[in-house]
Structures are given as structure tokens and as C-alpha cells.
Length: 422
Image (cartoon, rainbow, N blue to C red):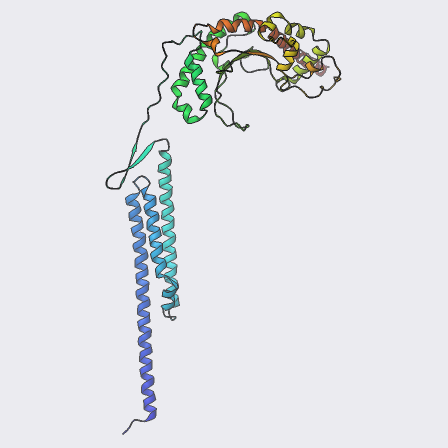
């Protein structure tokens, strides 16, 4: 008998149901297999990264670069598996498993990144510990880098040229070093020529020590002080200036009651090729001692006879005021115009007969010395001492102004104390 139409439709429905079940089972199997491959790949990549980093961490700098290359290659592989086409080809009936696989991948990727950062910190610490070493990387025949330390010997001092160092003279090498420093004022050059600097500094120190003994003889107010209280440092303070050169291209020393520091008048010597000079006085008195400046102005207002007499003394004219067309007082004013007031000081009329002296804030004199004055056989100390001797009255006059100020301050303190007692 021919089958009934109802039985035929039932048979077709049963076949369709079995086909759908088979497709869903196949899709579930694919998804499970996909999840297992992702888990295996992530674990393998993380394990390979750790093992490769540990193997390379002892090499100089190669651990970090190797770890980064592994991370980048793993990222590229994983991103290819999670492309839009592959995700779209999966069966929509398994969204939970796909999201779980993506979460596992992101978690593994974060762990790899954390490992890379840890490796970077270790490599940076290793490089910091060997910062002062000089390393040269050469490529050998096998294409590998050969890192080794090299030691560069320091430059030796200049030859003496048949001239010995003497404590009463300046060696020509000292002036040559200062000239080279002026043309190469950089830290690398300075430390490369450290031996020359040490020799030049020792030469100048010995010269100043010999000069200091003579200074105590021409001015009894100058004590015998240690060299560190007389010599200026060669290192510049570059914090508040646009000129960032690290060194002074000269040697300098100052003699006073308190050495190079303090508010007393100084005898000053400056050694610089082509710019050697000698002089003394008080510079920028308003900053160091404003009360002393007021006392000086009162003395000038009363006539300033003592100051003018010292400036016009023949010994001062002989060494400091040698201009034929200007008087000693005019030359003294010209030397100190650099930081003088532009207007008349408060309390003094601008038509005062000594208004130019009243505007001054520095009271100094100086003159240049030539390199020939320090040439071998010239005995520069015998050139310097007569110049400083001519300065003694001027220096002692300025110090008397400071001492008058100190006495007036002491008197004020006593009066204040007496008032307190009453």
C-alpha cells in the first residue's frame, strides 16, 4: 500500500530533527576544541615567555628586547585568531564559552605585560649600577655583540720645558692651562686634563702662600690665614645666571682681616692670561654693609679731605692713576662708575659739589698686569708687593669706616641695654 501523506511528513520532520541535532553537536564540538586550543596556546605563550626571559636576563640588555619581541609576536598570533571573521563563523548558540575564552586571553595578556615590566625594571637597575663604566659593543664574526669594559688612562701633565716649579714664581704651564680652560670650558675637558689642573693649582697655591707671608709684613692688620680662607674656588655658581660655563678661567686670592670673605677692605690678585690685574678696596658696599655706606657718605659730605688726599697721593698715582688727561680723582670715579647710583642718594641735593663721590657704592682701585710680569726670572712677588704697599693707606682708611660703624652699633647696643635697666 502506498504510504499515507501524513506518514511522509512525519518522516521528513524526523530527518530534519536528526540533521539539526547533528549540526549542533558538531558546532559544540568545534567550540570545545577551539576553547581547548586557546587555553593551550595562552599557557604555552606565557610559559615560553617566562622561560625565554629567565634564559636571557643574565645577558647585557638582551633580556628586555627578547621579552618585548616575544610579547609582540604572541599578540600578533592571538589577534589573528580573534579576528572578526573567525568570531562571526562560530555558532551563535555558544556565546558563554566564547566570552570565557576572551576573558582568559585578556587575563593572560595582562600577566605577560606585567612580566615584561618586571624584566624592564631589572634591566634598568643593572644598567644603573654600571653607569660609570665605559662599554664598547663590537660585532664578531658570528654576528653577536661582545661587550667589554675599557679603561682610558688620564692625560699626563704638560712637560716642564726645562723650567722647575718655584714657590715665588708662576710657571708658564699654569697660564697655558688657564688659557686652554677659557677655550674649552666644559666638564669633560676639565676632567680629562685633571692632572694639568692639579699641577697649576699647586703652583698658584705655593705662590699665594709665599705672598701671604710678605703681606703680613707690609700691613700688620692682615693675619696669617689658611689658604682655603684666601683662595677663591675655580667652580662657578651657575644657579642664577644665564652663563652656564662650569669653571672660572682664572685663579684669584684676596687678603683682608678675615680673608676673602667678610665686609672688610681687600687686597686682590687676579691671575688670567691677558687679563691679570691687581687692586683692592670694598666692592658694592651697600649690599655688604649699608650702614658703612652711610658713614662714608657723611665723611664725603663733610669734605672727604682724607679720602681725596689718599687718592691723590703720588704712590697711588704712580701705580693706579697714570692717565695723562684725567686727574686721579676723575680716574677713581671712572673705575667705580659700574654700580654707582644714577640719581643722587636720599638726603643729598643733586647739586652737591661731591655728588659723583656720593653716588658711588664701590670704592676700589685696580690696574692690569701683563703675562710678562709672571715670566720666569721676573720675580713677580717683587712686582706685586710695592703695589700692595701703596694701597695700605687706602685699605686702612676704608676699614676705619667699617670700624666706626661697628663702634656706633656697639654704642647703640649699650644705650639700649641701659634704657632697659632703667
